[in-house]
Image 1 (cartoon, rainbow, N blue to C red):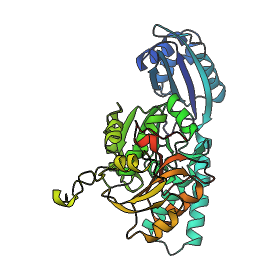
Image 2: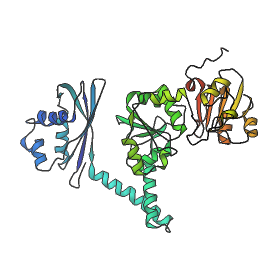
Image 3: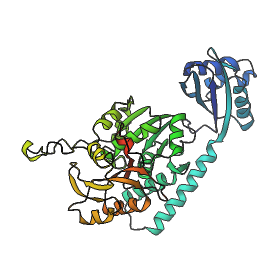
Length: 400
């Protein structure tokens, strides 16, 4: 952190060929720069004189290697700050490991603060003259909202916080609104998946970084985790409270959910494969005499019947996994028009194409499970799509 006396902020990248800790980095910096420069530029002396701030070190280890960052704030002049930065790059060992230190940037803290003042002044001018009727509270909320939106960047074409590009740990959320919500609470390493067809860019990201999946507390969040876990590498998992969306959570709820994340060990995915979509616990169970002995009672069962049975049909089902309507796979729109209620999901024994997704979206369908997925010119957001073999792990599809 910096205070009002700081002029410059040095940011360095640390890499070691073994496991190191924060204390090793701090020890190496002080130990290996001692005596390298004159007494006037000795780091310990500069810290004692409050000309150099504390060393902020963030380091993590994976696969037998360690990486991290070091930031040092100074109130020295530009030349002295550059010399201190150059001295850090002479470090060749941290703890017991060979290591390198690379200076990524030296920032002028005062220039950054001046730019913040200019940017905020522009916002306040626009708010003050265009919306003169706003109350003080409304002004504060609008500035906060606009500031958070302006911080949204893109990573490989997907909405992301400004730290996703460099962070060792990223948080996967469902979409732009969730990224915006986390930004409002100072969390800048989130990226939105934007649909259930997890793109290869996100899959690659999960292989390179430590990943926490933070999804909505509904069946959609469960199914998105199911798909993500099958194609990517998830380290930790957490959810919004049951029935809630990440974008609607308060500051306390967001941080509580992230603090309560748990290591992902496949248990939730196995549960979903065995029984995707159990009816809500409050659902009243029908009397045994009212249920057909072999009636499907889960998405898993419907998929096995419709797609596993090669029926060439489409079936609409309710949130309680009851059959609403059925018909030929080519007649999705007619089926939805005839349905007595809005289906929760449709099961399609055919390849899913863009027009079918658009129709389902228009009718408010939440999930589509299809025999296979075609090419989409527009990625679905409001309806979640799944390939049959991702829902029923041992599904045997007929050979065409």
